[in-house]
Image (cartoon, rainbow, N blue to C red; front, side):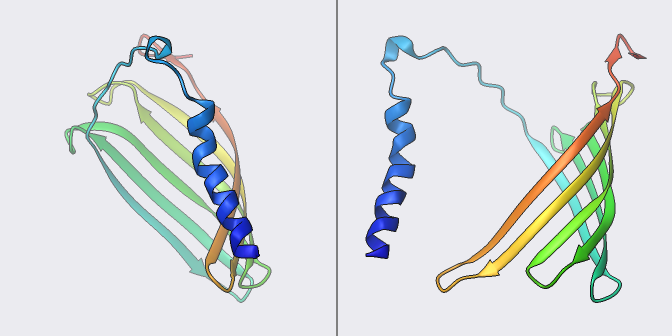
Length: 148
């Protein structure tokens, strides 16, 4: 009985968007296709200090045109409290440098404060990791090479 309900729910989830978005050819807007090739390098770490406390550190580098042009650099660090193996609460700070041109002469700085809630559990037929992260983003605008 449960399997039949899950199967019905899966069919509804998969095919409902197709039914809702069904359009005739005349209604479809024209598309602009922008192709990009990017390289992402990322290091994500968790340092366990005690049974309940951990430190977090992330470093992300993204480059365009393989590694020729800068795209952005990103760092994140914070602390995590582990209530148990399945329930964790994190918070910290992150900074983003977003390249606005190929020469890295014009870029945006973005500061972020974040909070994250993680619930992980194992069920009879699957394992689940549910993550909710909120971020407060503070950034500067750049116009004609001048930070506003």
